[in-house]
Each structure stands twice: as structure tokens, then as C-alpha cells.
Length: 101
Image (cartoon, rainbow, N blue to C red; front, top):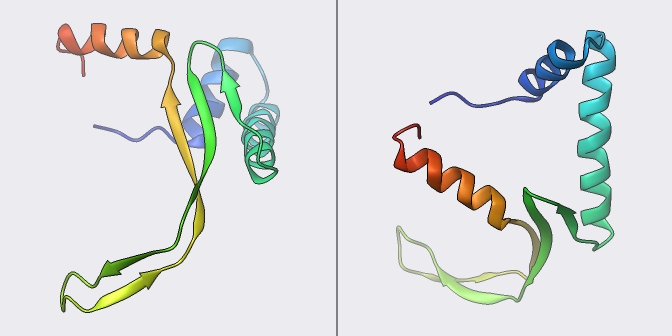
């Protein structure tokens, strides 16, 4: 299974809309920058029909080193999460039933 990269997305924009390579790369960068800045400022990013990006605050906790078993403190942190929307889930489930995934 291949990985879709920013370049792949930019090329798709270029082919579909006849944009220059430079403009399509800028457009992808702008979209990702907007998502990133919204999340950094604690705002959710909801893309209708696709899903929602959120920041989840995780509390500090005690974990264990898997090799040695020694307890270690895992510090509090904020992590980005993605929750797919219902339409997106249905599309993926439908393609999975057909053996396309």
C-alpha cells in the first residue's frame, strides 16, 4: 500500500484544476498551515464529510519501561487526534466490503 504525500495531493490539484505546480504546492501548504495553527490555538478543525481534528490533553501518569519494567513518569502533554466523520466511515466501509482496501 502506498503512502499519499503532500506532493501527491499537490499533483492531484494540478491535474484536476490546471494549476501550476507552484500554486498547487502553495495551496496544500496553506491548508495544512491553517489546520496546524487552529490546533495550536486549541480550536477543533471540522471538515464536513471527512472528519474532525482535535487536541486532547493527557494527564501525567506512571508508565513502565517495557525492557526493564522500571516505573517512569510520562509527562502531561497535548496530542492531536482525528475522528472520521460518518460519511467518511461509510465510504471506507463500502470500499472495504468490495475488497478495495
